[in-house]
Image (cartoon, rainbow, N blue to C red; front, side):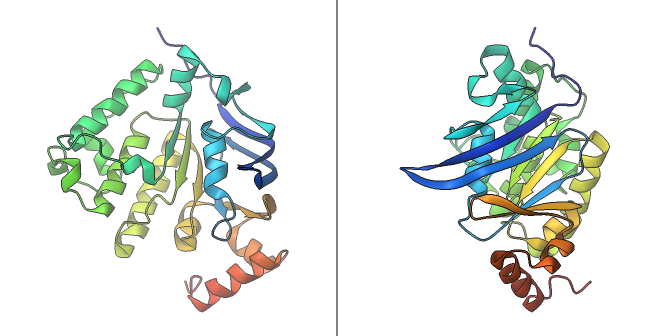
Length: 261
C-alpha cells in the first residue's frame, strides 16, 4: 500500500538559485505553497524565470543552491512510494500537460489514468470523470472524444480537469487558460476558485493574464531580477511601484483597462 500524504502538505522553495548553461535565472527565491492556503499568483515580465521556478518546484530542474522540499524531503530525492505520493499530491499543469502521445487516447482515458495515479499515491476518491469535466465547464459528451480532436482550449480544460482528478493538496498551474476563449475564462476561473476552496488545495498560478490572477489569487508574488521583489494583493503590488518591472506592468495594465471593474 502506498503511503498517505500527511495533512497540511507544503511545497517549499528556500533560497533557490538556478539557471541553464551557466546563466543564472533565479537568485535566492523563497516561496511556500501549502494545502489550505489561499491561491498565490506568480507574476512578472516575460522571460523572468516563472517557468524555471515551476520546473525547480517539480524537480525536473535542480537548484544550484537552496532547496525545494515536499513535506520536508527534497523533491529530487523522492523515490518509490514517496515519489508516488508527490506525483498524486502535488500536481503540475503546463503546456506540456496537453501533449498527446497516443492518437487514440480519449478524454476518459486521460482522466482514468489520473485516477489510477491518485490510488497509487494513496489518494482514492469518489469523484467521477463527469464531475471532473464539469469542474472545468465541459459536459459528459466529451468523455468519448479523442484528445487529438479537441481544440486547444478544450485540451487545456481537460488538462486542468486531469490535474484536479487526483484531488491534490498542491496544484501548480502555468498559464492554465491561455488557449481558452477569453469570453469563457472568467466563468472557468470562478468554477476553479470554488473547487480549490472546497477541496482546500494549495495553489500557485503563474500567468501573464492579470484578469485571471485577479479572479483566482488574493495574493501575488512578483518575480523580477531572479527574486521575489514584492508580495501582496495584485492591485496593491502594482500601485506600489517598488520596482521598475512593477511600474511597467502597472502601466500596461492600465492601458489595457485590466482594472476597469
